[in-house]
Image (tube, rainbow, N blue to C red; front, side):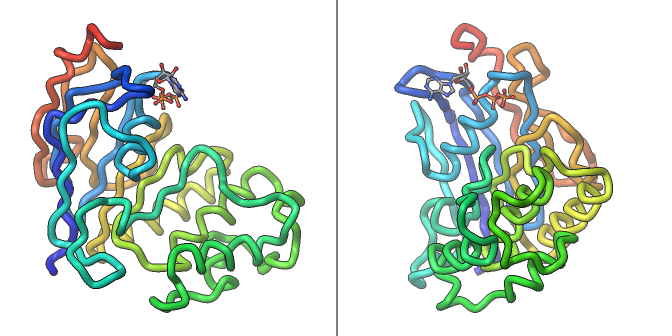
Length: 237
Ligand SMILES: Nc1ncnc2c1ncn2[C@@H]1O[C@H](COP(=O)(O)OP(=O)(O)OP(=O)(O)O)[C@@H](O)[C@H]1O
């Protein structure tokens, strides 16, 4: 397959059936990064959780083509082929970093698919091999980087990231931008919500701020995405 293409059509996301953002129309393909921006409460996390299959959409649809799921069948949802790293690190503080990442490898089917060694993944995030330490012993930025290491542990084409660089120092942000760029250059697809620039050279932007210009291209050389009809969502936000 050529790589994933995700298409949102009339997508309305929300909580408990109440809309938070949308309707949204966008298309993102392998080799592209979409940065979702917007004020606090604009619905960024809600959108990402919906794309990751953790929340039902209120209306509209998300279609996926061009990717194979771990079971060998064509993927029909992003959840089947995506890493999701949310606001929280999803790492247990009382067990070691290595045990946490071993859990993630099993959970993500890494034993079947191969992937990189834990120490190698931590090293890529700029962490020395501290996999024997309890996750809770690490500083906030180190905990975030240890959590992000699972992106490298098991290969998945789609990365859905919520404020991935929160708590990261400038050098670590730069290092992480390089990791994301390498993933995109290798045909990966990244959707990230953030308040701070990720330092990526080519991104598409989806601004969920109600009064914002619908969607715009941050880089005109990049493939375009359809304009989101955000004006229609103002009454819901
Ligand atoms: N569990 C929930 N139940 C009901 N409403 C919720 C829930 N979680 C979030 N919301 C509401 O949904 C709206 C969108 O929240 P969301 O977390 O998606 O915003 P965000 O753009 O990610 O904000 P931030 O920049 O602060 O992270 C907000 O009005 C919020 O209060």
